[in-house]
Figure 1 (spheres, rainbow over the protein chains, first blue to last red):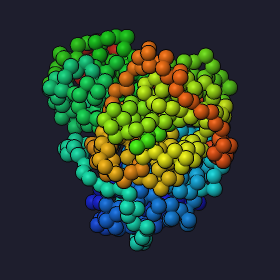
Figure 2 (cartoon, rainbow over the protein chains, first blue to last red):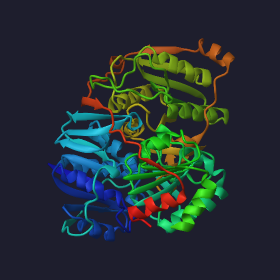
Figure 3 (tube, each protein chain N blue to C red):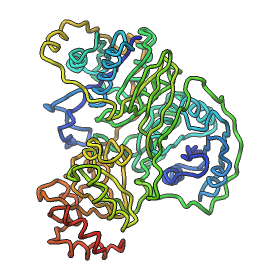
Figure 4 (cartoon, each protein chain N blue to C red):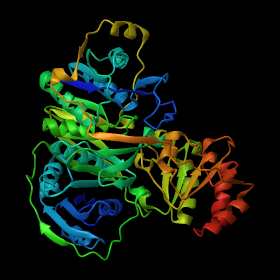
Length: 309
Length: 248
């Protein structure tokens, strides 16, 4: 089987989310990549070095600069004439593009796969991860998004893919990029961080959240996350949200601080290797999944913990 | 400008879904059902656009069992003008839903279609994007802000790492994210009035769409259960545990 993996990138480097998709694709067959971007030569070269990659299709055109789905999907759909499966990361970018590719191909997409069980059989979470469905596709071709935390990341070096320039239909002329507000941060990315420190509604306000959570995260070199309640209350921006409707994470260690542990939140972090919870309510559901729990007032415990580490 | 708002009847978001003992699916018998929360946000956004003068008529559509009428009545009580139920007892996959919606859009010619970004039942996150592809129109997925500006719509999208703003030529498809708005509750008088609003019942065959599923569900299981660990007495003990993990 020949697979085509959509490379997630910012025109300068390959985003980590791509690496888990390469691993999933390699379980199906030969791995080809699609780099759609503008002035993205460096991305193509880095993509070709990913272990296990055969061919890298590069479409370098201003129409693909911002990854607009209206422009990228027809390009990917055309390349699918020579491929059997299209895979994209289950990131906002992958989720934006893949179903559009599926519709062009008249294929029913399989969203957020957790495992490859056979050439056309996969597992995927439904009902916010409260159930796991095993599904088999009857379509001639496959369109899949891959949950990054469910697969090992492919090595970024060791591959020797060949780079091939391709062109697509270009600008569909129906949409244009206006602007983006992407937070610049020295911290590791939430979805690839080894350690995450997350805060909940108990943090009171934006200032208290910052003053309590940030020093601990700094000490541990951790990414900062938050529950939906904390995001809705405006303590931190949207993209900090960990949970079914936010980011799905699975770090080595996850600190849940002042987070009660609503199903919605648990769905986004329950695959973390070790969960450490600090909460003053001993009946909080978070303690049912935590490996280490401390029932106490976080406002004294967290600074004390930060100082002791 | 007409606005089309598809809505789905799903298990209420406060109910914990239970997997059936025979592994064929999730038990929906005697379970409270409601409008998919992202779809409520879609209905609300359509009403706000109408209130601002950007929308003229709001048509709510649901594809599902006869009881999905209740979901449509909720949309009508919130402020939609009329409703279409495409009745089927089968489970319909996003691709088939998108095809039915495409056929309805061909008839209704909406300027905007606003959908929830995903249902909280199968969590597919596909229908809006598929509909956009089938209509050959642009999409503003995971919308945080929607502003109609003449013959285009500016959508601020929630993306990994922050926000992205795109400008789309109308007609366009928008899918809603959580923070787009807070849906209103229908008032009692509006619930009464909604009973008089028109609701047309159709079938998939009326739109020439084949509902045969493309994916076979082989089984549905409970996820692996995580065991609760230990509770420590104080910060000093917690520090020891953390040091043992080798991260500090």
